[in-house]
Structure formats: C-alpha cells, structure tokens
Length: 301
Image 1 (cartoon, rainbow, N blue to C red):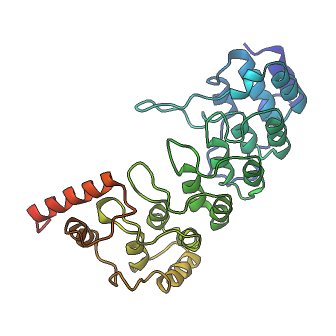
Image 2 (image 1 turned 180 degrees about the vertical axis):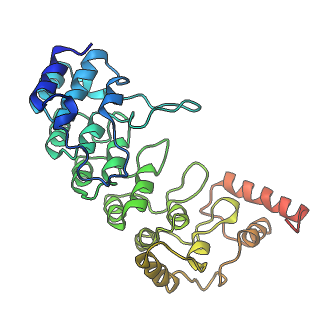
Image 3 (image 1 turned 90 degrees about the vertical axis):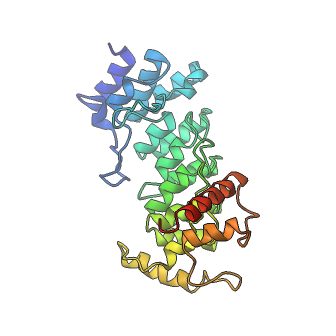
C-alpha cells in the first residue's frame, strides 16, 4: 500500500506518478532507463525509500528536501544490484541520482547533490554511466563538477567510459578531461581502447589515442588495439571509417613491425622475450605465455 506521500505526489501529476515524469527526454528511445514501477518494488529503506523515489521521479523538490533533511540516511536509497545467476527485470536499477539523471532533471540533480547525496551515487558510477549516454551532456558535466569519478565504479573499472565510447567521442573527451585513464584495463586485462576498437567506435578510439591511449598496449591472448585499426574493416558510419584512416597515419612505430603482427605472432614474441611487457600485468603475461605453449603444441590450430 502506498503512503500518503506517494499518493500525494501522484495526485499532483495526474492519474499516475509517471504522468509528470520527464520520461528521459534527453535519451534515445532505445536506451533502457529506470522504470518507476520496477523501482518502487525493490528500493531499499522500505516505505520511506519508496516515497522518496516517487518524489524524485515526480520532480517534487519540496518532498525530496523535507525527507532527506529529516532522515539523511535516505541518501543511500537504491535498488540492490542483482548478482549472477539472478537477473533484475528491465528498468530495475539505480539510486536517487540515477533516477534524477534518467528524468533529465538538472534541478533535482542539483538538489540531491546539495543535500549530500554523493556525486558517484549510492551505487558508485551508476549516475555518471547513465549521464554520459544522454544526447546532452549537461548532467554529466554537473556530476563531474561535483566530484564524480570518471573511472568509477572500482569493481568494474571502465563501465562509465565503455558507455561513453559507444555513445559519442564527445562523452569520451569529457571523461578524459576530468582525469579518466585512457589506458585503463578491466579485470581481464583488456584496455578501454581495445574495447572501443572492438566496438568499431573509431572516433572514440581516436580521442583516447589523442589523450595518450596506447594502440600497441598488450592485451589478453596477444591482442593489440592497433590490429583492429589496421584491418580493412567495413564500419557502420563514414565518420568512423574516416577516423580509422586518420589513425592509420598515426599509429605506426619505428620499433614495431608493420603491418601489426597477429595475436598468435605476438604471443610467440612474448614467450620468447621479444616483446616489451613492462606495462603489462604479470598475470596477463603468464596467461599469454601459457597460450603460446598451447600454440606450439598445436601449430595448425
């Protein structure tokens, strides 16, 4: 049963709480956003959490201010992330800032920040990760100016940047300008630049390289970003193909072979100590050498 606050918020907007929501007007229609109905069934802090989330979705700053001032612990209200093998329903994710970001509500974002909601969110990285996927980066700039970390969340090192690379080079530029690491790796040792190249996001790859991303950075199985740049790809946009052509004129190095060697050849070079590994995690080097031993055992594989 909804409390009087939830009902009052609904009444001020029409027949349903969602009637007054901005409905993610600054997002592409294909972008999955927090779904208020799903949020209200799963958010923490009981009825108070539900009332507060409803007020955020409704844009009711007076209710949000009153509730957070009365009970600061509500600042951490969020939907607990599902853990494998469980899956949350579509739209059932996020925290207070994420809900405001999804509504494209700059005023609510400002209010939550003023009332002490952390700029990284109760689920670190969730608000900024959604904000960089918007058509307008205004809220992403708000969060970064308030101290949101461009490389959040710690346990998933470049989910925010990954979302940015697939959205726009402008979003990538924004995160890098606020200190994101252009060579950051995930838990497998794959760099964000490799991920951009694998996603055919060559304009984003170009931005990463311009900010110091290494196209020759050694990744799992001997894969290098430069291999994907050099391949004769058929990209989805002319702009990305133009970026790839520009990169081809930049990524060659006097101390590396051209065209870039295959992953198998790189693995062999690593195993024979003919490839620089000073900037490569030791566990990744060990995995590459183990793979090279398998290559030797199966030369036709």
